[in-house]
Image (cartoon, rainbow over all chains, first blue to last red; front, side, top):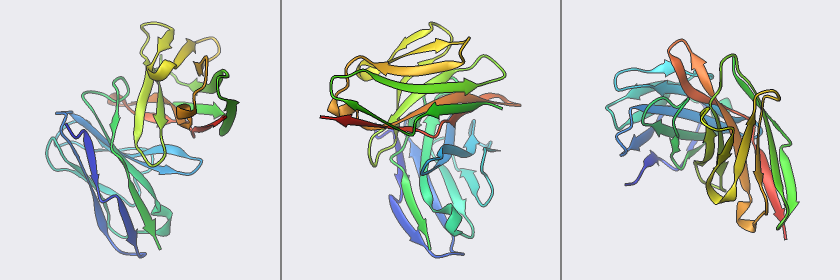
Length: 114
Length: 116
């Protein structure tokens, strides 16, 4: 099993450009999550999807949209990128609720917005 | 709201010495607590978790943590540090929302440095 995969690994954008970060898991997990990691800030939850067809805002949702395409895939979209969105983005999944169960993380996407 | 405080953004120990990484939490309900480790340029992986079964929790790679409700703490320890333990360590507490416990709130992380 590949676990949680993310594409791309690296991306450079100009302010105002849009892009979609892709995430897929092959563990048949119900819940999927997007976090961003900034130096000295730990990880902060952007959006999550407790099950296929549902999405909810996390701690820092502004400037992002998500789509739970099917049980395997959960994408994060930046409609108009801003320098403040320069970060490392991690996707994660759990079989059930992440407040109880182990989260499995992808390798991350490093995004630089100029 | 839940929160996590990790004391010390950087901790340096000698190889073979005791590792102690501190974590204090705030939660309005009995918490589930986690320690995750992140090696350079990688995602996070679970070290151990507390889910109310036992206060002393053993994890992978010789790490353990003790849940102390009176101190609202969940410190991570390892008796003897190894060079391979050098990494970033995150303490996390379960988020509680209207839909129940979902997602995690992470501390800011502690960078563990192992001196030869």
